Image (tube, rainbow, N blue to C red; front, side, top):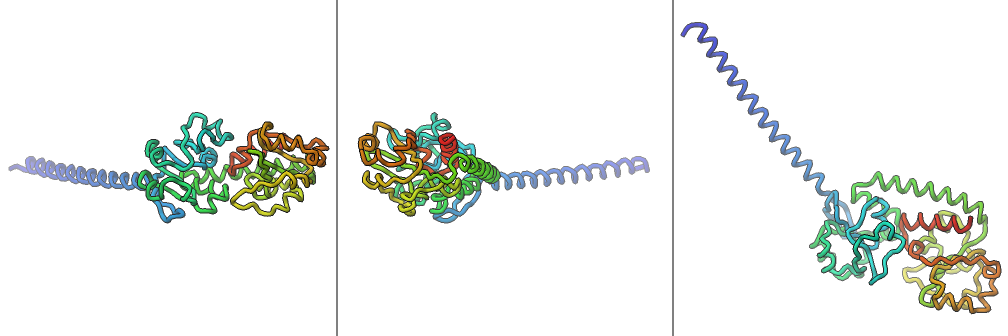
Length: 320
């Protein structure tokens, strides 16, 4: 073999070796990329969070969320539930602008109904005895998160937890910041219109009178965030217990509020009884024509960002 042929042969060998090395390298890189991508996908597909019943692994981006009676929090984070809370035909009316087209599910969460809507995430309150099934029953249908008592009782804590669960921490923080700004603005307006005049809220339903304690539902926001003055009759009630007990018509004769908001339908027998009571009609709030009637009580008797913001708007408009 002459020298020219030797050089050509050596060049071919070297080129072949380089091509083989490059192919192996690309193959290994591809395997590494595939493995990394797979790992990233697995990591993004699920998250593990602490719940009232311990750690639970849930989908990172659930599309069909069942969070009965916590729809307010979902709406605040721009999420639509797969089904909405109901007792028979009754729903949370104040949310209907967003949930009118969402099917209902009975408040006890019947297992057959839950199965039929095929949720990929279920969120339950800590009072599990209220549900038809057990935690294990729901967890067998879909990953199930159980809210703590604090998360149930404090809507701001609940909103932050939902933000964590749904990967919307920034949205939750922004919503709370916007809410604080709304509260501060409303506080200034109400200070101008009400000053130190007191306001009471009462729900009348089924002929019974439920006066809001200072910590009951949105009254907590009205008295403790907006700094609206509570009348003595409300202060005497103290902190509201879990069971909301009605007060008597006789007790209402002691109403000392400068303004009274009555929630309920005007044809309710309880409101009819008030209008026909000489003692009630002689109270200062009635004599001064400072009784306001609102038929839809739903945002006033719930707690959440949407409920609070709607109540703020109504309150400010009422006293303009």
